Image 1 (cartoon, helix red, strand yellow):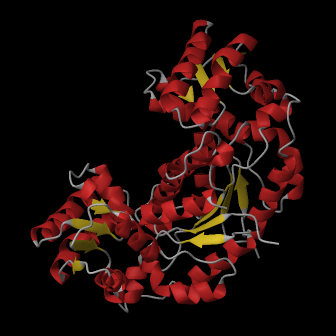
Image 2: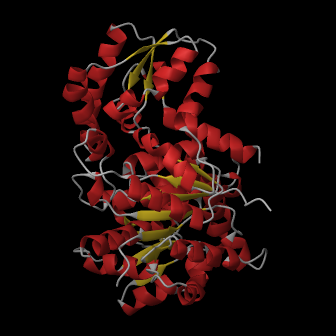
Image 3: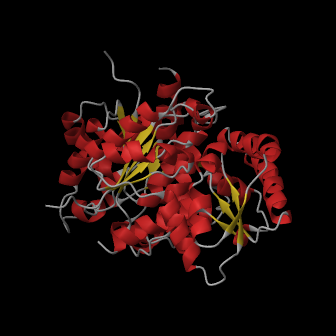
Length: 235
Length: 235
């Protein structure tokens, strides 16, 4: 017998972004009462090794903690798992192999949303961690769709993106937002027509400072939430 | 060996209130980085029998689903459990007996917060479900502190409180807020100096409509979140 639908959210990276993902799940689901909303079990444990540092070879791997979270979500009865953190998808294969519940991939969800756009962009900027950029998932899948990808430079990452993210993580949304707005403008100036905000801290911060270009952005966390909601509604 | 700290949140009643409780947990915890925030595992499964109807004898009991949630949170490693729903505390004894992890009681957390007030009120109004009011937990513990309790009338509950709550549950925050503001004013007019908002939908709705008397209210969910955060910080 199939397990009843229960979405396991492997979160904690960071705790605020995990809340935002849950808000997106509610917003993606037309519901007239509580019972129509997605059943979820959310692992929001921020005591996990820093993904950016691990991928830079400057810290321990988060894989043991990610595997533990996957095991606990399976034990709690999850029928599907979503990870609202782009960088953590570096360990996607190992986690998928260890999980009974299938893990939805955030890049697949984003590309599916991008392909459905009426006004499909030719050049897309991407704001993401060095780890996500080096992994090349977004670039490869967008190239396969004939979309040119515009990436942050190394200087932009160290000057704007990284301090912007860590500001969000300590709750300084305005400070983080201001830095991330500068990163976004740099990509628009180099020709990006739209932006993929491929790090869950970024949309939270741009929202907090009311960035005027939000309608030109894709939020992979939102695309992932919408895919989860579609699965729930189609069950 | 003691289990590592992991707060299990038995939520889902409703899904929006469960998000609000997680936001209160973050707000209650001074943190400079992700790792300093409370580790939580959140059961947000709204497919649970209606508590108000069950207590009115008009529907099935939610106890089997509450017991299942308690078991799953224990399986996922919870060291403590919090239930951010006043009415669900009707089943507190049965859940506590079935849980390895101790369950914090929302009324104890609220009374502790009320007792710490510099400007302690003599007459406190309470906005709550019929089930919570009939259980008498708040009334008994406030009476023991010499505080007079002012309750909604049956007409106020059916005219304002109940439809207000269900409006919140379907996401109509402004509509729910307007009804709950009328309930609040009625209690102030009968002499309440402060209000205990003893149903997790109420603070969400009053916040959404910017009710001008919010500084005269106690939010038991906030008191519970602060108690959880204190436990985490003192670990």
